Structures are given as C-alpha cells and as structure tokens.
Length: 473
Image (spheres, rainbow, N blue to C red):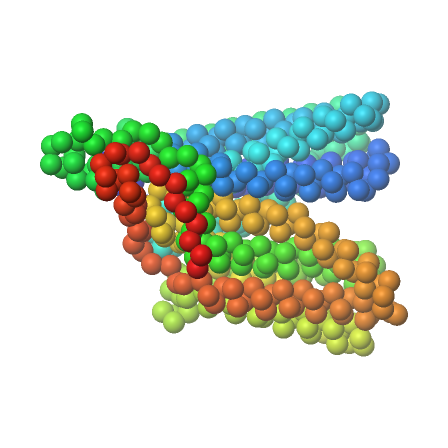
C-alpha cells in the first residue's frame, strides 16, 4: 500500500474549515449559552461553569478516540462521527437551556447529557483532525499549517459569535434553539464537504498496526499462512506502549503545566485591570483584545520561522517553545511592577508582549506535537495525540479554577489588590519556567518512526500480541 500524498495548502485550508466548524459549535455552548443561563434564566454562574468543566473532563477519552483512528487506518470517519456527535450535543444544549426556563430540573439534566456529548464529539473530531494533519503535512510546513488551522478556528469563533449574536435579538427560547440548530447543521455540512475525498481509502484498515516483523518476514518468504496475525491490539496495550516512551511522557507533562499557566491567566487579567488601574469594562475588554493581537503576532512569527523564512537557525521548534515559555514568565513578572505603580501604557505594552510570548510557545508546542506524533512505535499517532489532547483539556478545565482560586486566596491573605494579583502572576511565572525546563528535555523530533518491537510472541512464532510493560525512565 503506497503512502498517501502530502497535503498542499488547499488541503490544509480544508482541514482549517473543519476546525472552524468545531469552534463554531463550541463557542455557542461555552459562551452564548453561558450568558443565557446567567442573565436570562438567572441561574448561578457556577452551573454553566460546572457544565463547561464537565465537557473538558470528558475529553480524557481522547487517547481512546485516537486509538480508534489508528486501528481503523483512517481519520475521516472519526472526524465526521465526532462532528455529528458535537453538532447534536450543541443542539441539545440549546434545547436544554430553553427547557430550563420552564422545567429547571429536566432542563439541567438534559444539559448534562448534552455537554457530555460535546466533550465526546470534540475529542473524536479534534484528535483525529490533528492526527490527519500530523500524517499528511510535511515537516517544514507544520508550523505554518498549525497556525493556519488555528487562525481559521479563531475566525470561526468570531463569525459565529457575531452572526449568532445578531440573530438572537430579540431573545426568545425558540430563537435560541433555531439559531443553534442552524449553526450545528451548517458546521456538520461544512465538515463533510471539506473532507470529501481528502483522505484516500485504505484496503486493509489497521494493517500497519497489526503486522509484526516476524509476520512480514514470513509473508516475504512465502509462508505467511503459518505466521499471519489479524488480531487487533487492545487499547490498554497501545496506551502502555506510548506511555513507555520517555518523550511522550515528558511532552504530556509539558503540555499540562504550560496550558495550566496559559489558561489560569485568562480569568484574572481583566479583573486585575479593573481593580488596579480602574479600567472600565470596555477598556479592559480592549486590553484583552490587545493580548489576543499579540498572540496572533507570536503565532505568525513561529509559522514564518518553521517555514524557513527567518533563516535556518530560527527553525528549532524546541527553542521557540522554551523561549516562549520564558518570555511569558518574564512578561508576567513585569506585570508586578506595573500593578504596584506603573503607567497604563506600561501595562498595555506588557500585556501585548505576554500575548506574543503565549502565541509563540503555543504554536511551537502544537507543531512539536504534530512532529512527535510520528515518533516512537509506528501506528500509534492517534494515541499520542489523544494523550496530549487530554492533558491540554485537563489543564484548561483546571486553569480557570486555579487562577480564580489563587486570586481569591491571595486577596484574603494579602492586604491590597496590587500585592494579591502580583502573587498570582508570580505563581504563573513559576509554572512557565517549569514548562520551559520540561520543553528543553524533549528531544527535537526526527523523521524516522521506530518499528514495532519484537515481542516474545513474535520471537516464538505464536503471533499473539503481548502487553508491553511500562519502563521506568
């Protein structure tokens, strides 16, 4: 079976449309429905917060979803199936929100089911999408490809939020359900159209994962019937094989710590600007927009470096990940003197620099993830990508709680808001320094995946796969 051709920029853009579709449904559930529950339904803010955390918690199934993509040999069915689940979950979440206006208990019970479906759908579609990118994009294009896909996701956020916001006025429960149904339907149709004939069919799904070296040798010698193996590996064995890889473990911890630091700053930056600098809600929102503009600049810098536009020496993704984390830590430290008596211009410059550093390390991490997915034992790209996706989801689920909880604790212990926020920023800076050390320990990806190790079963000719024990490294 010949290898599938590498994706060009049109193919990458088509996958970007899928990512934008995923983002469109997610932004409706995590942003619009959150607002409706708190404002129109007068529910405690804790309820939508718990539902959003639930959809992150469910994403711990990402390694299992990636394993399914590995065994099946194709990512497209998992992306479409996950998108269908996500679209239905998004629609049910809107129905549940509208129902909660009259039957609160039933509506919230349906909301729990809907957000579980959202988490499952994001896990299946998002993980398999990254696997497809990792397999089909050449190494020198991956940083730029990751940037393009993530930019299109942000565009999906913006278009959906703006369009849905205008269609929801004047608000009514029926209008909410209709708009959500439209977003979910369009997202699913766009996904199916974007993936049409993008990934070639394989005649023997999972064959590469199921064959052993002894079986391949037997087939070459004409004695394949005596040795041929068709049993599929079990998920626990595949996960154990990936976890036994030192780089996969280190990168998982790096993703968790760095994304925990990244997400924990989101919910306290605007309150910090309002409390310490007396910014109005509009001014603090524009400050957040300035930070996101910096993120975009950082992403484009890494994309240009990864494509060789900034010279050969600037192409090291590990250097960008380490440098981005250290620069993020430095920017957070600079927020301390800004909060203790700095000027607003100093605050804005520091926040923009923080955004640039965040964008640089995040795209470098995603590009490294795509390269490392093919390292180690072959046929485990989905499990690796799922492992790292689960680490990221867990970090994002905990990030808001860590940031706000640390802020509340610091305000209770310390005398002023300035010193309280300074303590939280220093804590986040420490997390970024730890992330930089972890990123430095991850080796630069190579281009040659390792073959399956010969198990005792293969050496004895039995053909039965054996569990791989975890190695202490």
